[in-house]
Length: 254
Ligand SMILES: Nc1ncnc2c1ncn2[C@@H]1O[C@H](COP(=O)(O)OP(=O)(O)OP(=O)(O)O)[C@@H](O)[C@H]1O
Image 1 (tube, rainbow, N blue to C red):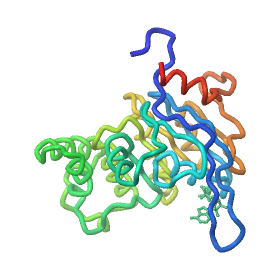
Image 2: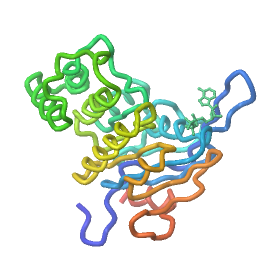
Image 3: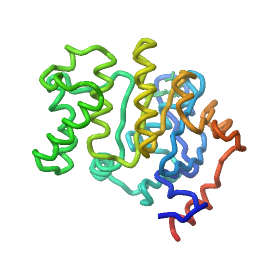
Image 4: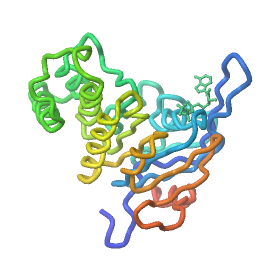
């Protein structure tokens, strides 16, 4: 544990991340060299115009895509040599992800959707059930356990997705436009829930172009043309916290 005045440990540390997509047309230079340090307990929002590369960055940070260059540390461990299988295991333990379109398994009930990652992580069925019950109750979904995702509203489906993302108590929650397909009531609800989990210590990295949602974060990064254009803490108004990747790496090696 850090002492008084010390920065908490980095949950995520990226150094020089680069990603170019090669589609049908010209290559898209989505991420052009990103250094980023997210510390335990932070709530970071990444905002920027459409096509800026926000989702690509989030995919790199969650190991859903591989960078062309650069390094990524997750919870103090370098991920550069991880295989797909190793990433799947690490992600299950360390990263919860929510997406714009929920990505629930349509053929599984609400209860099974939430319990599945816990069971895959090796939790005994009784514990998985207990975790699921607690989360669904907390998210106002008690009584919906047997429903199928298609029988729920968008807002309810996103709450199920949030429960699924948090069931293994991951150190990091990644959210990619989590209110992008919801109305303003659903957006307020997602904002309230993210704030609540953050207040309890959950580290969150949110990608959104919705300023209302971004205002829940305590640090906002403006992303433009594949690069970090600005990085500021909202409450304190302190100057950009663009910590050099190298200094944080040295901290990790301490
Ligand atoms: N799989 C892909 N194949 C080819 N090009 C891609 C792919 N994914 C993203 N791109 C391109 O990379 C660039 C960045 O896209 P990305 O989705 O990361 O941006 P974004 O900021 O998240 O945009 P939005 O807010 O619209 O979702 C865009 O030019 C996009 O067309």
